[in-house]
Length: 117
Image 1 (cartoon, helix red, strand yellow):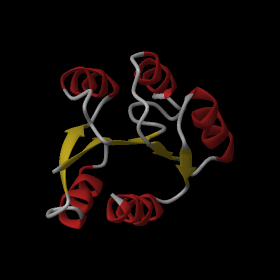
Image 2: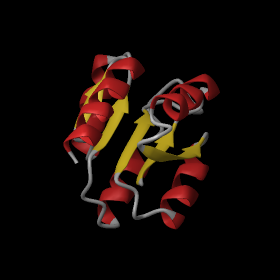
Image 3: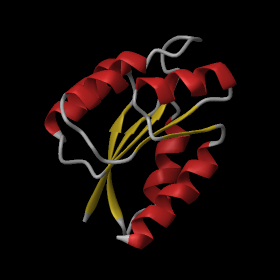
Image 4: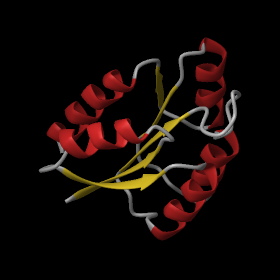
């Protein structure tokens, strides 16, 4: 089964991911930046990483985490969400492959990606 590392502070979105991918992927949940580092350290074999740009702050606080994950050699798809255009550009520069405004767009994108594999 595929693994999706979900780094997101909104618990309802975790439930949406679990419900959306119940038969296709295991969801590894992190709710803070610190948990994101910890979960990635123990799940470097994740197939896809999805994260919110702003977890604990009103500014993008996952940029260093994104860079860290890429430095550690993760080459799989990594996607972030942000309602702010500037933050989306920063996430792309930090190493994300895609940045969407809506978490629902991310769910659709991940479904397409999993269907291809």
